[in-house]
Amino acid sequence: MVTIQDYFNSGIIDIALLLSLALNKSHAQLITHYDYQPNNEEKTQLNQLIKQRQSGTPFAYLSGTKGFYHLNFKVTPSTLIPRPETELLIDIVLDLFDENQTYEILDLGTGSGIIAVTISDKNPQWRLTATDFSMDALNIARQNAKTNINFQLGSWFKATPNQTFDLIISNPPYIKQGDPHLNDLGFEPQSALVSGKNGLDDIRTIIDNAPQHLNKKGYLLLEHGFDQQQEIMWLLSHDFFKIKKFKDYNQQNRAILAQIKES
Ligand code: GLN
Image 1 (cartoon, rainbow, N blue to C red):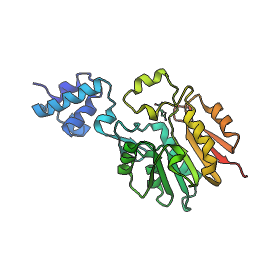
Image 2 (spheres, rainbow, N blue to C red; image 1 turned 90 degrees about the vertical axis):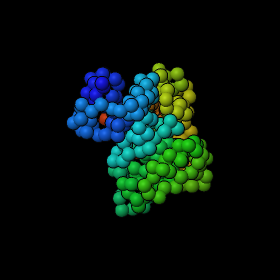
Image 3 (tube, rainbow, N blue to C red; image 1 turned 120 degrees about the horizontal axis):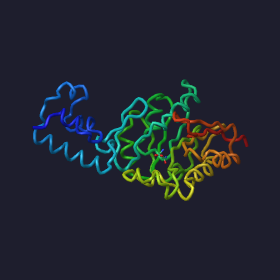
Image 4 (cartoon, protein in one colour; image 1 turned 60 degrees about the horizontal axis):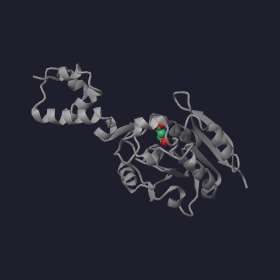
């Protein structure tokens, strides 16, 4: 006979989380029912999850959810799994803008919607537009929305023709083609991760086109790779000033905020 305790002692990766998911029980319920013997149906379900997890499927794709900031988000293999580093962008925006004023804010390449949905939930007075070139991702983002967000389909600024904003935010793909780090990310959409030879193709497109889509004194906020700060500062220097750099919680360079120059 196999009990919950036997599973706990098995050393199987993420076994506590997988048990919670398969038996629909909280961690506390599991550890207070150590002697419980999962029935056949539960065992089949659990074994299937264990197999998927062992072959590399991230837990978030098995549970279909991931926490970000103060909310839970639906995620599927069409969307990147939210990273804790990206919470830094939320803090920067909440610091930047006056909570009692109204702003037009754009989240480019929203994926599961985390940036737009979180900011809009924190301040429903700000007007959020969120774009993605993937229809599947945009549908997930729509399901994640708690407030009224303007979702638009298209690649970068092709999704927002003739529109201007007070702030443009993006966590674009920024990993180099062939980066060994990608070996661990094979279950996630590569189009949300990889951006050309040096990982800067999409960041360059965004920086080049943002000025046409920014209001006077508007800002651009980007998440980027730990080794891309110098290059991005240089790309920004043509049209932007008042550049501010931010490190993530692991002390890696991770985000950059810049204001459009007065023309
Ligand atoms: N930060 C992610 C990672 O390194 C990459 C996200 C991205 O490319 N925007 O796993």
